[in-house]
Amino acid sequence: MAKQPKYRPLEVLIGGHRFAIEYKQMEDYGVLHFEKRTISIRKNLSEEDTLDTILHEVVHACFALSGIGYLLDNDNLEEALVRAVENLVVPTFKKEHTSYLKQKE
Image (cartoon, rainbow, N blue to C red; front, side, top):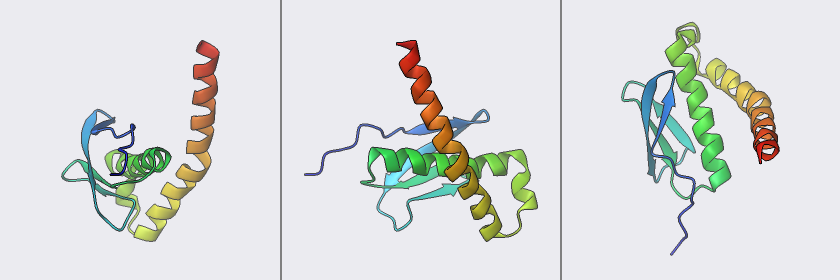
């Protein structure tokens, strides 16, 4: 039997809105269901991939909550912007946050 990953949050708070997180068999790594306030994550991802996928879907939710999503009438454009944040901002944040936590020890 496969070992369950330790990092599997059941919800995330985004701009004061609670989004439930569900884990299921699916082809995509993750999907945001904005109107339902849920994020679906592929089961059996590594902890790192789970975190990265949740953060990716959080960026989608941020665009929708902020109203920027109304300006993005092309799914490819939105995905490109999400991936820009995911690949440029998120790694920097993760590295600096880890350094911050180590410094606090």
